[in-house]
Length: 518
Image 1 (tube, one colour):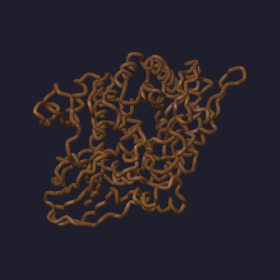
Image 2 (cartoon, rainbow, N blue to C red):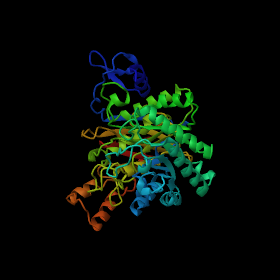
Image 3 (cartoon, one colour):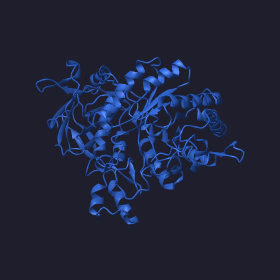
């Protein structure tokens, strides 16, 4: 990516960068200097946010809670998976779930007879999708991975369940697999239902999930074959890609579909907070975990708007603060303010952003050995909600219209009934201790009024202290799991009052607050 393109994303996101003399300014002021410093020390602990209560605001769809990722397809048949899915559904009302490996051999979709003819079996597919639909969640179907008898080579990914990342030995047979699969779904569920699903071709073909060479050319062939097969079953089926890691290939993918007249209904890609700038933007510079997702989302939004298909929906089918197992990140209260700030940065720039993942019923690194190992899930082993789960639960309470305010630590929203729901946070890096913030909300033209204050932080909605007090057992007993679930429960809100339209809230480092004002 060219420096000017990254600069455009930096300017759009309001990122500051270093200039000669050590001052920090907006990127637009000094467009030639792209070596930015590490984030500045925590802001002053006092902040006042003035709000015009009668402002109509602008639409604020809950794009962050429409879809979640999860462990691979076969895991959806477990009761522990379904229990966690129901919990997240109850907390967020999410619509779609995405997972890998619907074509893995353990699902049994594809086989070949003794005379090498294809044989299909959709028994587990039906059980998987029936279960999701019974829980009122639709599949966002990732078409992966390659059945081994259809693979052109023995190319297995390092994941514990060893998916095949090989190209097909016969692209015609790959197309036939997609045709039979899609036709079966339409026959079983009806086109009015399946047309509301999404079909995404493969997963992260730009890295080690695709063994085709050259990667982009062979992936485009894989995509073209699948997309045409789906549309031949019904033009109402929605298909997209390139499902890349590190926000890659989106511009080239769109141009390919235009040049070759290949169907596409959406573009999808992935980014994580600890992705490296050189992989996402093509530049050797440090971008903080706090800013990476927002900058990548701006960048891809601009790519799409500058393309020959500027109206294509953008779906981030994976995002998180980390792609590694980092307990002080994904298990910790840090996720609350990180999520809120990421939503603030990405508002208006994507159709959906899908948090990876809803549950630690997940086996990419192998069978879970202990709770709170840094898994991606909102819910830990044993059905124990993490702070991130409770953060999503609070953020679900935000309204559907956003009122703009001059703050980088607040989302002010209005609900249909006219009440205000305001998210406030204190975001610092997970390795930093930070300092408390005191945020004063000032509502113009409002006198005394009650307010509810919900919190997620180290002592509200977090089971980690209780787990530490138990001695961090690798295999908690049923009683210990019960106590951990109790400790993780979101406590009821504090009841406070506005005086002459003002209220001051103290927010600890790594803390998230949801303030409700009727």
